[in-house]
Length: 291
Length: 236
Image (cartoon, rainbow over all chains, first blue to last red; front, side, top):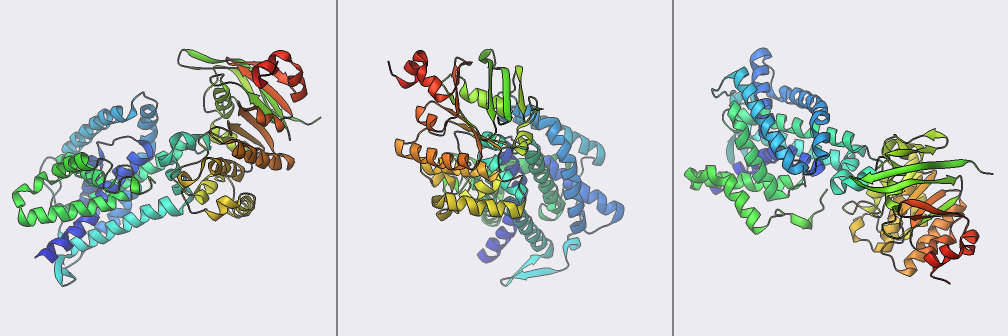
């Protein structure tokens, strides 16, 4: 039983790493709090749902389309919203208010477009039959989602540590003012990070019907809170710390659902409060580099 | 007579309602080292930031190689060849190698490799610790990293904000020695300082006081001026 719980927690942990990754990337680069993160994930989920019912592609194809579409939408959205925010006296506080408003707008638009009922996609779309991992059987959709999430984390690592733009992105994360002084086009670098952040949320959304059971326009706020728990546990502003936060969250969730199921919904709040009281800089804290 | 590289005149700038620069101007010629002397709060950093496009000038004009760059973004100025070394001197959370790579962001991969190898021969202490975080360097090494990062961009003019800040006299001497080496290779330098030791490098000097240029001339002319000598050298 415990082996199953731990392995399922690991698969879900990888998925929750993907869920929080975009939020942490955006916070790390821009120091703005995207309270609409969960709503972009919800839109990614409905995009995959809508595309499946319209053309019937495999969600793994929808994943690439969602990434491209959301990155393309996010790039101009950055220039519409963020430079004005960053020139304000208290951009972090203002970003909370602005993105909360955006979250409400996105949810309302999704209700108009899709109604309020729960939707889902058949699990077989991501593979047939159970998959055996270390002698335990898991739905193929969980394994596919976990592997795809791990690949997305590797993609972000490669981007940040192996590409020219990634170096510049980390420079902005480490010291915004020095980045401007060095001649880095900070708004271009930030807009690309914003695009990747929202695109990752949309990709996480594509897997939401399989990992979360069903999707509704109102799911955004819960996802945003879960994402905050994941990135605060890891390390706020350190995208790769999200992986640690995601795995801890995933395993804790599975343990709670197995042994204390009626308490499972409290988990994100308990983790958030616990970490903020005991180790506010996250588990990785200052022992790791910020970027 | 060498050509003017940088010319600035009538610059005014303010932080909110507090005006800091009052019609300041200066020039740097090719292969020339200019030192901008001034006390804390004289407006040196603000003047450099206006020259780099980091703060907008409310009046005045900046020209680089004859081109009006007053409204040009900082990244475009860096591409033209004006590179800024701030007091921060690099990104503390990144490695030395990463800092140099970021400094050479506009340079092609092969050329950057060549320049990096050259910089590592000039700064062996950085070469030894190239994978270490910049935050682990001592104050003097950090300044060297700032210089190396700026030089990776291949500047025509290196603009430096107080390279002696926080350094012991021994390290100040080392920084001056390194800068002298690059000056001999033809690099133009504009150095804002309050440490008169840097006058060793200067072809010309400006003094800045209360956001206004006071004295402009050569070091011997400066030493001959009683008022300036008293103010900056503490001599009677």
